[in-house]
Length: 128
Image (cartoon, rainbow, N blue to C red; front, side, top):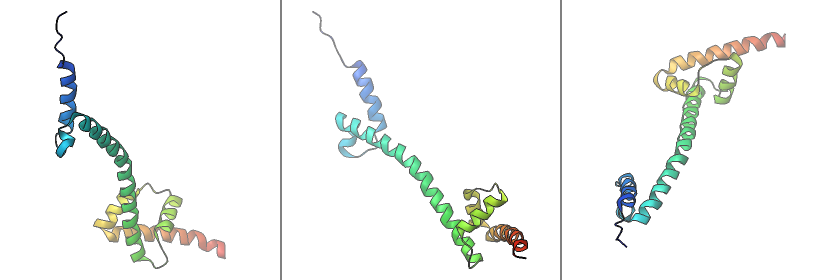
């Protein structure tokens, strides 16, 4: 029986994996078994952290909005502001509000004052 020279397909597969982990340090970029394990681990971490990044940015936006809103009014905070915005059916999302608060606080003050003024106006006839 003739001798079969193996390695073309396996080498191609290993080379593809090695390209993925070429920037890793130590055995993580040299040993085939460790390379396979680290590739799986890296992909799992990337998948998990994509969702985590969304959460972290939402927390950052909420913190920034709350800081700016609390400077403006003593008894006014983020949750009341968002509640009033939803009542008004405003289409401004948290990301845009945080950018406005960061770049132009006066504009966010105007938005919050407008929302509060309308809510106070709606509540005042009920007390009479």
